Image (spheres, rainbow, N blue to C red):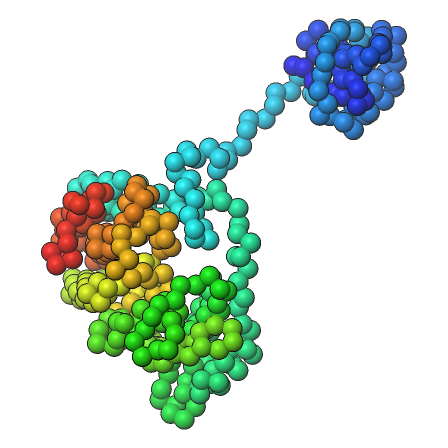
Length: 390
């Protein structure tokens, strides 16, 4: 083992433990002999060398150390093997570290494992930690209003603040009760804008509005499986959306995780409601962009589903979409987002639906939908079923 030290800005020496000698790099005519140096002088040079450890070595000459000086050196430093290098995210292949415009990197969806469903299905990619090689973006510290500010905001909308429901990158959602009619409740979403959001033209509006508002206005209120937008307004910091809030509701993910096992009738009901919601979106020219179990609410009493959160939605007339414009969930992400530079709405919808159906099928402990799910999770979008075939 060889240890390199620099004793000054102009010279350095190398300690070779196997032969008890030091290699000294001369600077100009400077030459040092260490045959008669004491242990104290040895450590003085070591300490000086540590102050500038990154100097470049030049021509080398060998000078012997005495045995006593070698014994004074700290035991174990010369003979110890360097520790093995720790695993790093840099070890991930470069092709799996594709940069995205979103605030996070996504772990690519692996090829589905089409094995027989004798036990637990493995058609879907397993939920594993997201691997990110990107530094934390500077814009990650988004502003979130305080409870007092939310109370003022609710009052401005004619409601009384009740409780916070959730927070995301660009806004907060809270539950509120109408002041004049206490039987009316709403989920109020306040979106802080930063000047980088998308805006779309809407019939009847004098100027473009926030894309999320435009998408929900386009969807209307005719589909019972999509959350309804009651009203909206714009203030000096962003947009306010007043939406329906189902009673005693939770996310579909939470419901499946805590309900144990569901019966076949409930599973089929969930499946048809999700398909109705996606078909309605597709027929109205909207790609949801972030369809997964956390963005679906289920009412405990009625088992009605509501698809929520159109903040990542895209207008289908703009397809093919750039894959970098996909900002949705990683686990339910169609593989073409990583495989291809562009993607289309319908096959991406089919993949997301099949991914959710697979989770519901597990909770129902049935293989009834296995064949359809396999066809919908084909890696090549051209090989998947269409929405009207599901």
